[in-house]
Image 1 (cartoon, rainbow, N blue to C red):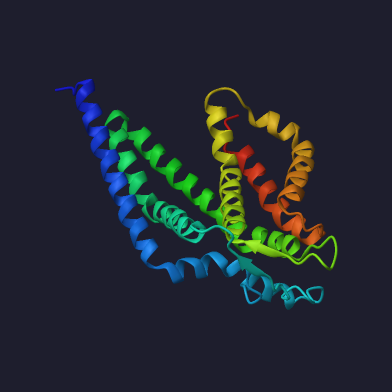
Image 2: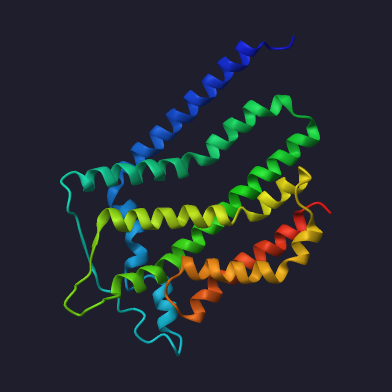
Amino acid sequence: MAESFWDHLDELRSVLIRCVVAWGICAVAAFCFRDALFAFLFAPAHPDFITYRLLCSLPCGEGWGEVLVSFINTQLAAQFTVHMQVAALAGLVIAFPFLLWQLYGFLSPALYPHEKRAAGRIIGFGTVLFLCGVALNYLVIFPFAFRFLATYQVQPEVVNQIALDSYVSTLLILSLLMGILFEMPMVAWALGKAGLLEAAWLKQYRRHALVTLMILAAVITPTGDAFTLMLVTIPLYLLYELSIMVTPK
């Protein structure tokens, strides 16, 4: 017997409640592990971070490890609110597989068997791409950008002291931006399925895309050196080529 609209609505309510509860439990757990959470968050700013150590081992990497800045807090409740915000985001990341599983379980009864298999692959592939974008920002883009911006001075008398909320918001926004950019193949596939994009068009504008991606990489990484620019441009261009492959002909 087919379920009514209200039955589906009730099931959706149950799914949302389970998702919120799972998110809340994971957020509380992340909140309790404050030291580990913020050690991970501030690792890219540390001179011993893996990216700095690798760069220092290169012939041209002299001085890359010398990033010594102080963090300050200028608002009474900022440290507590930042702690809550970071814990909530960490809880969302930890609970994300469960949330996807719940969403898939709600939608799967309306899908045909081949659609279920396709949906599972799409969700999995999209999640992997998003996490790869976040990892690239955490390991490469943000450490370079932080080193450049934190040590940039208009005058020697102007000392940089980085506000806590500025550091956290910059890291999180860049991570989200890179995660979204890495969904490029999924967007191209969806537009292709909708008949709004063709692989031939993407091939035709390869050179234009390369220039655009280089400009975008230069905006994301304001360090000004060619090495960092290439580290960001190459993955983005590979994603463009992957977009060509997955876009329907």
